[in-house]
Image (tube, rainbow, N blue to C red; front, side):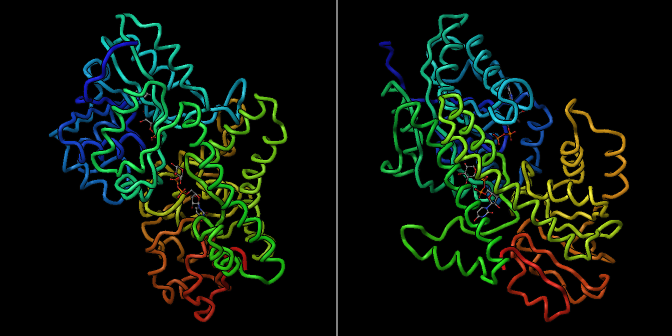
Length: 469
Ligand code: UDX
Ligand code: ADP
């Protein structure tokens, strides 16, 4: 390959989701000289990106989108034109865990990535740099390269891996000031082309370049390490509850050790989100594939501990409420997998609600950003069986036992208990005197985030239970 690479002036990003949307908005905002087109097969999603109500809730995102949309940032469904015109194409589509066939429940479903690669191969002309942005199993770049080598128009490609490390809820801060940007590739000129883009706002010392496989593996490893910290402190929370220690005190104590550090030690009802579980399961699958069962078991335990934490939360609720929650109204505070996002993927709330419904509790759900439609979709999905269908009995269970409220206070009115499942800031500002007055007694609060721990709800009459004390 001898082609020289001119500076990038046109970018196409395939996939207008939680990763593609904010990342491209930031690139457009910081690089007014680059034309950025974000494309998606989902026309509704594109229409929302072009409206005043963006499809994802993310603090600071509206301003960044508004600063560039209609100038150098476009959201469109005209995928082929955008690919054809671009010098650099980002693949930022979803890679969910496979639900069928070989590797079901573990391996990543690369169907969408493969479709993108085939589309790029089919419509491209000249030279393009293809950037993997989606979280992918190690060595996916190899597969992408092979697909791209079967091109219709003699086009040529370089493949880069540029994993995203932004966390939802703080995506804009993370994009503005990333700890590092990782760029893996083979050809130095292509790597440099992407480095040049980020160098518009990220100090060069934070732009790390590696080989393709290291970059892909670093993303899985970073998420596995972060999730492992949460599972580790959650494991200790169970021991704290049994012994009278306080997990927040233990976390603060160990976090002051500079070798451990204070972050990601907040015990909770369990981690969620689109990445942690998926990436660990992916790692587990890879280890098994490469004949490393001990390594696979080691990492799988992080996910098992997370499942245990969610189950433990429901068991504690049921035991505390005199061994039955059947026909009792429970106010569910929060459905998103963390605060400041409307994303519910793998949210602990889904599993806690499922298990409470199986106990025949009546749930009244409130989340400031998640739509009723999304919550119902998630609950129906979690009850689907082997054939990916929900039984009539389960559908009735949801219909007869789930209602929605437009405030935390309304969700709790006349209830036996409150379950705090997302740490939204507004929950701490609720009118607890009025809430207490409207609840059945004893008025139980089960705080899966320890968000209300400092409010001394016991003094207001509540029976308050948090995590890990
Ligand atoms: C994560 C990674 O942080 C990010 O770098 C990667 O690109 C994508 O995956 P995200 O899933 O958006 O980001 O959120 P994160 O803040 O990591 O939280 C994940 C889950 O862990 C949430 O459910 C959160 O509530 C939980 N968590 C996090 C805890 O329970 N305790 C903690 O101390 C930290
Ligand atoms: P992530 O969190 O990784 O960004 P999302 O599910 O939020 O995941 O976004 C992925 C987006 O990719 C979705 O909007 C989906 O419609 C889009 N997508 C999936 N496959 C394709 C494809 N072949 N062409 C264009 N867009 C696609």
